[in-house]
Length: 155
Image (cartoon, rainbow, N blue to C red):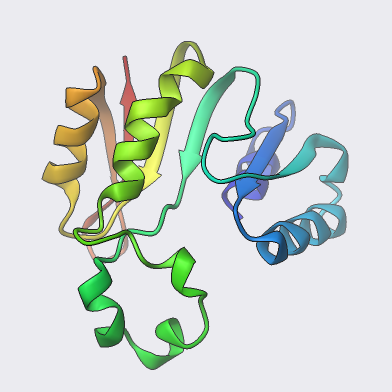
């Protein structure tokens, strides 16, 4: 969904949507075709950066960010609809951010950016993870509730 929203907003862009779930990729591919974006969208089945190649101006991610212990406390419509791998960010909810911060540099163009969605209490922890990997926070976007929801980093 992120890649398709960006393609809709930036007519000259192309995007590679990466997911570990074949079902999510099939849905994204169908949606891209339905939106007339299929020629600019490529789906890639990969565990994070494992099968990614090339360089990108922007790496945007909505990683799983809920701590494992909190999955059972989610609203039924979230917990029962979304696959656990789309929700569970590991023991502290931050494992995906460590992976992204540690590996993204190898796939970014010069002056490229990394944008990640976060849980509403994770701004300081995620910022620290990216700072330790050599990034600086360049922008924070808030959700409708006024919580930091998307952080943008650059080197």
